[in-house]
Length: 125
Image 1 (cartoon, rainbow, N blue to C red):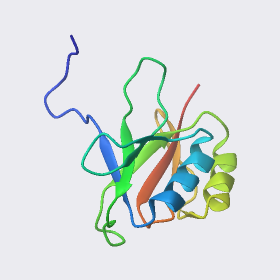
Image 2: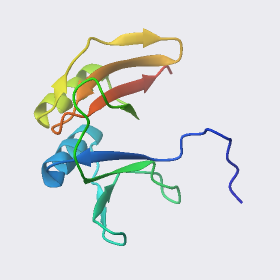
Image 3: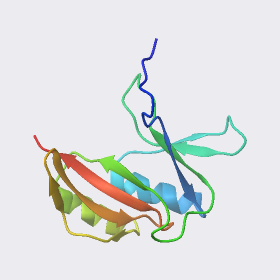
């Protein structure tokens, strides 16, 4: 049985006007393929997750919020954040901040190809 906490974030959905373009961006950034799922009312593309684990989100056909009006999804990466910045740019996204250090790690803000706000995060080792 799975235990949850009231108010716990369970899942994130990231809208994409062009899902194919968005999937290529996230595959470039996360260095892993997204898995298409056609079992619901519209196709979705699941983010990478551990074997036996549950995905924490997906890309779906939809309209992103306007700049500054939507939420920010944060993705953990294991490599250097400078390399992740390069992958954001290579995938067609935009880096919108310098690296920000906080007590548990570091991150930077970016936008994907659809204009969604992202945080790219690395835990301290």
